[in-house]
Image (cartoon, rainbow, N blue to C red; front, side, top):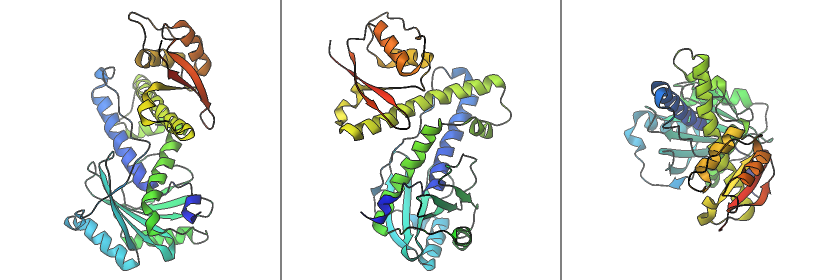
Length: 328
C-alpha cells in the first residue's frame, strides 16, 4: 500500500477553510439583509465531496500574482503535478510537489476571491498536517488535527521559512506527484466531515462573520438557519457512508432516509412533511421525543408508514437508522 494512503488527510485546510468561509460570509450576510424572507429561502451548504478533473491550458500566465508565485515555487524546487477544475466549487487548482522536502503546494483560484492564493502543506507521521498559506485570515474554526497558519501576501520564501521552522522537529511523510489530486480530494472530505461531525457552523463563527452585534433573537434565528443546513449535510454524509457500506446504486439514492439522534421532535415533523409521501391533508405533529425513537413513533402514526421500511443501521461517529420507501 503506498505511503500516502495511510494518511487521513486534511492537508488542504487553508484552501478548504477559505472556500467554506467565503460561502459562510456570503450566506450569513444574505440572511442578515433578507431576514424577513428567511422562511422562504435557506442557505445551500457546500458539497461534502469534490472531484478534481484534469484540465490543460489554464491561463495562469494571465494572472501576475499566479505567474510570480509559480516562478518562485519552481525556483525553490517544486515540480508540476497537474492542473484541475473543481466543478461544484467553481475553482481551479494547480498542484506542485517537492518530494525531497515532503511538501505539496496548491495554488487556487476561486471566482468569489479577488486573488489566487497558495497553500504549502506537510503531512506528518501521525497523520496530522500543517498548512502555511498566503491567504487572508478568514476567521473560520480550524480543524484541530489540520491547523493552518495564514500570512497574507507572503512570498514563497517566507512561507517556506515558517513551514521549516515550525515543523523542524517533526517527521513527515512523502508526497508524490501522482498522488496530488487524490490527496486534495481526501483532504477536503476529511475537513468537511469534521465540520459536520462537530455540529456544523459554530456560534463563534456566526458572531465573527456578522456585521455588528447580533441580538439574542437574531442569533437564535441564525442558529436555526444553520441547524437546518447541518441536518441537510448530515443526510448527505450518512448517504455517502451508506453507499460505501452497501454499494448502493445511484438511481436508488432518493429512496433512502437516514434518521439520527441529532434530530429534534420539530426536525422530525418537518422532515416528514418534506420527505415522506403523505396522504393529502395529513397534519404532522412532532413526536414526544427526538432522534431514532421519535421517528419510530412518528412513522407508526403517519399514513405513509406502509411505504417506509427500516432496512439497516449505520454505526460510527453518528449512528443512524436507515429507511427505504417501499410500494404499497
